[in-house]
Image (tube, rainbow, N blue to C red; front, top):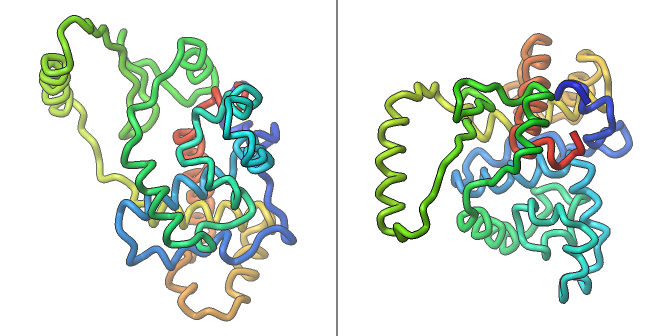
Length: 252
């Protein structure tokens, strides 16, 4: 795979069709009044449903998690952002079909996560695929808001001093990094929905017509109106998918 744009052609991502796609798979208007934590949880879950290797996790019997067999057979489980109980419903169940209790547990998993770690082969693959650009000797830029940096950590300093050193670095680099306003979770989920509609129906005219055919008037305000906006949304969704789940997950 030479470039992230080829990913959808190489069966890296799930392909939606008219039969598989339901309104709950593309209509995310209902998250409007959810908390930012809940929106982030839904976003990570829904984008994970696009990743074919993640989708295989739903086939793992829950009994396998009682010992190490699941992680031995599926080493990429270490990249799964939620608990294994979620896999009972994944990937068939849209986020809207998950219970409030389960979503709350998923939020807890997200809040307790640490920063992602990349091995050297992954960093090389990301550059080859065009989803990470080297900006200086110690930094790879992944998006307008995301960078991968290299650190040397002297564990002899202890957590307190290391935390202080990292804080000093963060303060300095935050002044350098001019971050534009982030794209909202609402917008990224709307973009994902449009991406799925375009996959299922192909042309903008067919995709939009079938979306509006559901008879819900709010969709005229919720969805983008212009074909150019749909095209941009599709690209935004694919870029977000690759950013959230780097090429180590799809054999780049």
